[in-house]
Image (cartoon, rainbow, N blue to C red; front, side, top):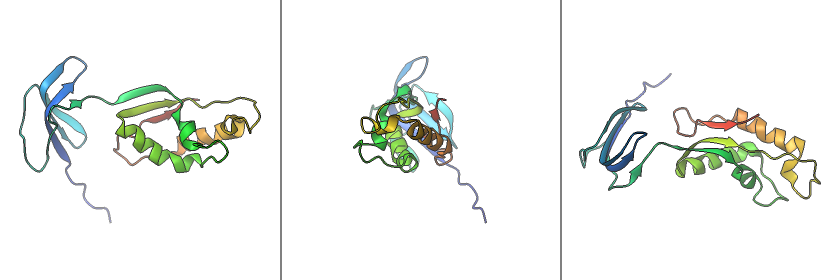
Length: 151
């Protein structure tokens, strides 16, 4: 039986909030059920069960990486022993989000080189990476739900 969805809310006070139009310092943000309800140039409350005091830290929209090549390094930290791309994606995705990157366009190399020189740049390996990217399903509502693969 499905459990009823709990109301999720957080207030972030005392932040340096960067918006498309201004930098609010101090800034206050209220988020409920994944929606920004309030973004104000004010301090806001400093305590409470759903309040985070940012202590002046930057709060900004997620970053967009339009040409990421780090996925191949995550798959094969040692070129002679690559991991399955589907195994790597959850931890790689979490790493990106922790760095503030919420949207990624992955570059996947392809070359007809000797597999020993670069084992990820074969047609089969490039296709396996693309298939894993398209099949990757991060948890619903996570900031990581915007990993993209360009065809």
